[in-house]
Image 1 (cartoon, rainbow, N blue to C red):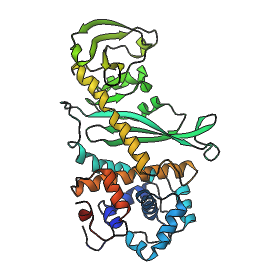
Image 2: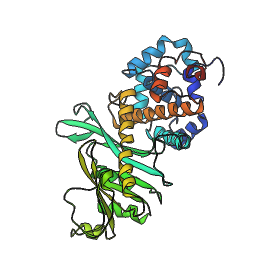
Image 3: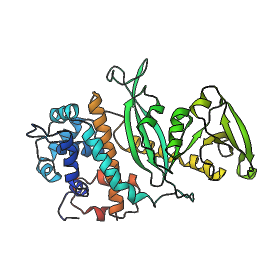
Image 4: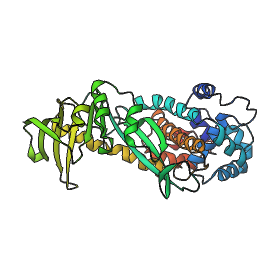
Amino acid sequence: MNQGKYVFAQLNSLVVSYEFDKCVSRYQGDYKIRGFSCWCQFLCMMFGQLTHRESIRDIATCLKAHQNKVYHLGIKQAISHSTITRANESRNWRIYADFAGYLISLVRPLYVTDNDFVLDLDNTVYALDSTTIDLCLSVFPWATFRTNKAAVKLHTLMDLRGNIPVFIDITEGTTHDINTLDLIDFEPGAFYVMDKAYTDFARLYEIELYRAFFVIRAKDNLKFSHSCSRKVDKTEGLKCDQIIKLSGIKTSRLYPGKLRRIKYYDAENDLLLVFLTNNFNTSALDVCLLYKNRWQIELFFKWIKQHLRIKTFWGNSPNAVKTQIWIAVCTYLLVAYAKKELRSDLSLYEITQILGVSVFDKTPIIELLS
């Protein structure tokens, strides 16, 4: 780490700016732009995320207060409220989505073997879920959700071996979770763990055809016939392990193959859970534990909502909202990358808080986090 750099500049120097430039060129983000570049926009918005600013005016005011330092943060153009606002409205949000994709490819391998995933499986395990971010209908009329409420949805596919998101899609609140399955390139041999909201047997059969596996909660009205049952250890909470075929007129046509139905009693939460999977080799208890690990994605949603600015938006258009969310995701990934690169034992929350109050400090990050 270079001596004499501000902490904010040290953090951004961890990644190669050439990769960001490729994303900008792909969408001509800096075409006919003389002053405020996409990189400066990214740095300003990331500054707002790290320092927990409340608005774009707040960001501009703080940066102006340290005007003699802003150049050394990497922001080499004049900053104003209107400049950042126009950039968020007009610059293609896909620039920051693609940069987040690059950061995912950088960060994900670092976390594959460093988590609490204890199941003895060679397969990659993904969790798929969505979270809803409520908005004001009068301010965000395009974000249709309910009669008196607007919202956007954050659809996320997470690698449970590292708790790093590998796919994110941002939609209006009315978009059904099932549609996300059409956007995913399924990996042969991998597990996809989902809640019952993703029950669509035509799409689940697509996963089967890709030779991938799914674990999903079964709906209560499922019609099926079972051909045989396997022995289970009822002391572990297992109730049954059956090989079934769907018997509904429509579902039997959409999913013609066999399925495995596992019933499990969760004594801790007093819940009777029924799972469906197309994997016939993994033990019944491991299938249940796979679903239990799905809650890591809920913790991710909770973390970014609590510690990043994605519940209050700094622009009203779809482009501005998506830009803010994607830069928040990039901020999360950069902090996660810094944790591994600097071999810090601190949590992501602790690192975020330290960086947030130290952006204008010249202490090497490795000393701050040691």
